[in-house]
Image (cartoon, rainbow, N blue to C red; front, top):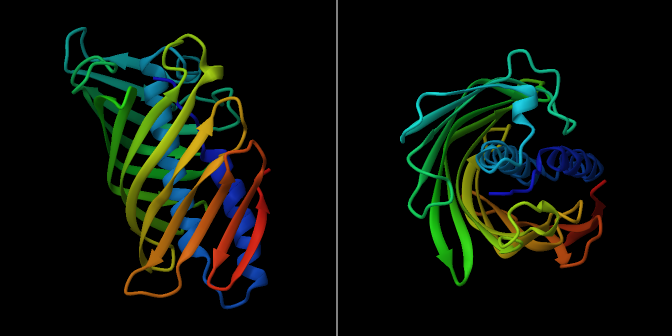
Length: 261
């Protein structure tokens, strides 16, 4: 499967939102920033192994890959201990382990991904991500990702916790598996987590997120983040399916446009 990669974009968004937070004084934007960071960090982890499954990955050039056997279930281990970069602007270290129950593109296959001392650009990522091929839904190949005990630790030592269930629907480009430039993905799902400040929240994609490989930014979709026990809803709106770098962030009665570059 060919998938988008969001991690660098997520850090850019985090920096923009953090600046907005500082300008708003007491407004707590960590609900939005921390959910975004954790969400996109696990998207990147998913991307690394799913791309490797379909020969559209740079992992072979920057990680020592080993296979446990040639019959399923197969354990693939990617060791980045000697990596200096994967050609995608990210420096990885540690180990990703993926256990495949069958061929990636076969309906019913599950891939269980775990990490050991794994970092991307200094951000530590741990937890379990189970990917399931749920087959063709409404004419489109669809995959479900279930993240449990997810944890992202920033270079400053801040810890963000996350559990999530998302569906990745391949809405364009599945008929040309050797050409990644025409791929378009639609994402839906929910999550819950705890911010770096220890505050619990839930998150939901209320309008499906759309991302084309031909565009550097998310083009469409709305994500709502709700503090546990009530509080002011946070909303990130990526726009009306146009390829531009603008998104709107709303906190109560206040909103602003942000630039994702």
